[in-house]
Image 1 (tube, one colour):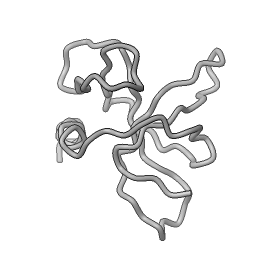
Image 2: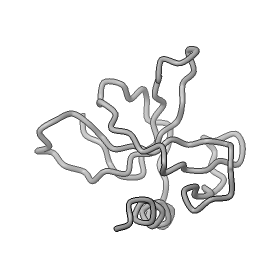
Image 3: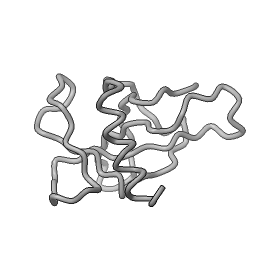
Image 4: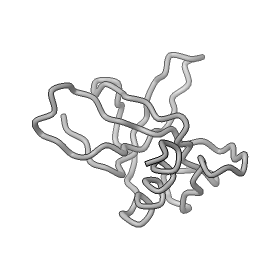
Length: 105
């Protein structure tokens, strides 16, 4: 399996049997040495910080949602359950800006 930036997957974090949505932020790489993708969780909680990116309203999210770049995680491909949607390159650029801010890049 390979992933593309902007793809949104359900991920079971093993907490109270709750599936969370994550957006892939890592680059597409067919030759990556590990089956991992860097992903940012999607949440409905907004604390009004530069670490949260307001996401556009899309059919696969029931309510207003935000990408929380402080929650960046490496997720193994076998933990990604079902592609639910994808964000546009413009939305991904906004998420990347927040990631650059969070890592002081």
